[in-house]
Length: 111
Image 1 (spheres, rainbow, N blue to C red):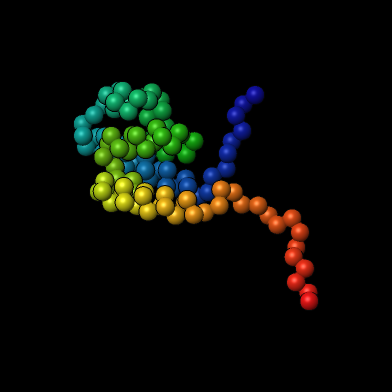
Image 2 (tube, rainbow, N blue to C red):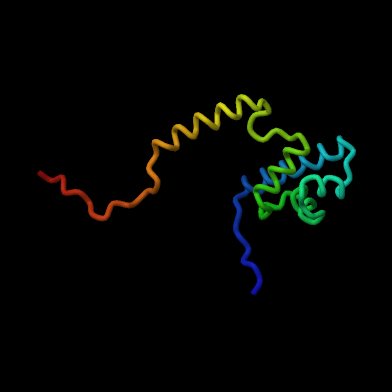
Protein backbone atom coordinates (compact mmCIF):
# COMPACT_ATOMS: atom_id res chain seq x y z
CA UNK A 1 0.00 0.00 0.00
CA UNK A 2 1.55 3.34 -1.02
CA UNK A 3 2.28 5.95 1.61
CA UNK A 4 -0.44 8.56 1.99
CA UNK A 5 0.70 12.05 1.05
CA UNK A 6 0.69 14.38 4.03
CA UNK A 7 -0.53 17.94 3.45
CA UNK A 8 1.89 20.74 4.35
CA UNK A 9 1.15 24.45 4.60
CA UNK A 10 2.77 26.85 2.16
CA UNK A 11 4.80 28.28 5.05
CA UNK A 12 6.19 24.86 6.01
CA UNK A 13 7.05 24.05 2.38
CA UNK A 14 8.79 27.40 1.89
CA UNK A 15 10.73 27.03 5.15
CA UNK A 16 11.89 23.52 4.18
CA UNK A 17 12.92 24.75 0.73
CA UNK A 18 14.86 27.69 2.19
CA UNK A 19 16.65 25.48 4.73
CA UNK A 20 17.54 23.00 1.99
CA UNK A 21 18.94 25.78 -0.18
CA UNK A 22 21.00 27.12 2.72
CA UNK A 23 22.41 23.65 3.42
CA UNK A 24 23.26 23.11 -0.25
CA UNK A 25 24.92 26.54 -0.54
CA UNK A 26 26.97 25.95 2.61
CA UNK A 27 28.02 22.48 1.37
CA UNK A 28 29.14 23.92 -1.98
CA UNK A 29 30.94 26.84 -0.26
CA UNK A 30 32.86 24.27 1.80
CA UNK A 31 33.68 22.42 -1.45
CA UNK A 32 32.21 19.14 -0.21
CA UNK A 33 30.80 16.58 -2.61
CA UNK A 34 27.41 15.06 -1.92
CA UNK A 35 29.11 11.76 -1.15
CA UNK A 36 31.52 13.31 1.38
CA UNK A 37 28.77 15.32 3.02
CA UNK A 38 26.32 12.42 3.19
CA UNK A 39 28.98 10.19 4.77
CA UNK A 40 29.81 12.83 7.35
CA UNK A 41 26.12 13.43 8.15
CA UNK A 42 25.42 9.70 8.31
CA UNK A 43 22.71 9.80 5.64
CA UNK A 44 22.37 8.43 2.13
CA UNK A 45 23.03 10.59 -0.92
CA UNK A 46 19.35 10.23 -1.80
CA UNK A 47 18.27 11.61 1.57
CA UNK A 48 20.77 14.46 1.22
CA UNK A 49 19.30 15.26 -2.20
CA UNK A 50 15.80 15.32 -0.67
CA UNK A 51 16.99 17.58 2.16
CA UNK A 52 18.63 20.00 -0.27
CA UNK A 53 15.48 20.01 -2.44
CA UNK A 54 13.40 20.99 0.59
CA UNK A 55 11.35 17.80 0.98
CA UNK A 56 9.35 18.38 4.19
CA UNK A 57 9.01 14.62 4.70
CA UNK A 58 12.68 14.18 5.66
CA UNK A 59 13.50 13.18 9.22
CA UNK A 60 13.97 16.22 11.42
CA UNK A 61 17.12 14.82 13.01
CA UNK A 62 18.73 14.22 9.62
CA UNK A 63 17.94 17.77 8.48
CA UNK A 64 19.26 19.31 11.71
CA UNK A 65 22.44 17.21 11.51
CA UNK A 66 22.99 18.27 7.89
CA UNK A 67 22.48 21.92 8.88
CA UNK A 68 24.92 21.57 11.80
CA UNK A 69 27.60 20.00 9.61
CA UNK A 70 27.09 22.64 6.91
CA UNK A 71 27.33 25.40 9.51
CA UNK A 72 23.81 26.70 8.91
CA UNK A 73 22.55 28.36 12.11
CA UNK A 74 19.13 27.07 13.11
CA UNK A 75 18.15 29.11 16.16
CA UNK A 76 21.15 30.95 17.49
CA UNK A 77 24.71 30.42 16.40
CA UNK A 78 26.00 31.16 19.90
CA UNK A 79 26.03 27.86 21.80
CA UNK A 80 25.78 29.57 25.19
CA UNK A 81 22.69 31.53 24.11
CA UNK A 82 21.13 28.35 22.72
CA UNK A 83 21.80 26.47 25.98
CA UNK A 84 20.37 29.39 27.97
CA UNK A 85 17.20 29.44 25.87
CA UNK A 86 16.89 25.66 26.21
CA UNK A 87 17.22 25.85 30.00
CA UNK A 88 14.70 28.69 30.19
CA UNK A 89 12.16 26.82 28.05
CA UNK A 90 12.72 23.63 30.03
CA UNK A 91 11.87 25.50 33.24
CA UNK A 92 8.64 26.79 31.68
CA UNK A 93 7.76 23.35 30.31
CA UNK A 94 7.94 21.82 33.79
CA UNK A 95 5.22 24.24 34.91
CA UNK A 96 2.84 23.33 32.09
CA UNK A 97 0.38 20.44 32.42
CA UNK A 98 1.41 17.10 30.91
CA UNK A 99 -1.72 16.98 28.75
CA UNK A 100 -4.71 19.10 27.87
CA UNK A 101 -8.23 17.74 28.28
CA UNK A 102 -11.50 19.22 27.14
CA UNK A 103 -13.93 19.83 30.00
CA UNK A 104 -16.44 16.99 30.25
CA UNK A 105 -19.29 19.06 31.52
CA UNK A 106 -19.95 22.76 31.34
CA UNK A 107 -19.94 24.30 34.80
CA UNK A 108 -23.30 25.53 36.00
CA UNK A 109 -22.62 29.16 36.82
CA UNK A 110 -26.25 30.32 36.73
CA UNK A 111 -26.86 31.32 40.35
